Image (cartoon, rainbow, N blue to C red; front, top):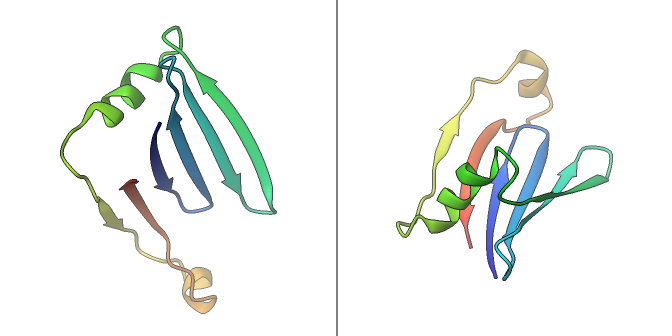
Length: 85
């Protein structure tokens, strides 16, 4: 089973490629809430997600986003990151 972790500003998503080629997303959001999604070949996002899993090159993409004044005061880092495990 392969896993991809994607960090957004306000959530973290973990994508798992199952043995039956389904992709399961577990999304951890602010307020300690969690949502689960299942993607199969019928879903329009499936092709984009499966391409991430089939990418043999190690990808660690880090895009820095300018902080708002409130984020700066709270010392929050707002960034997007892909991480292959």
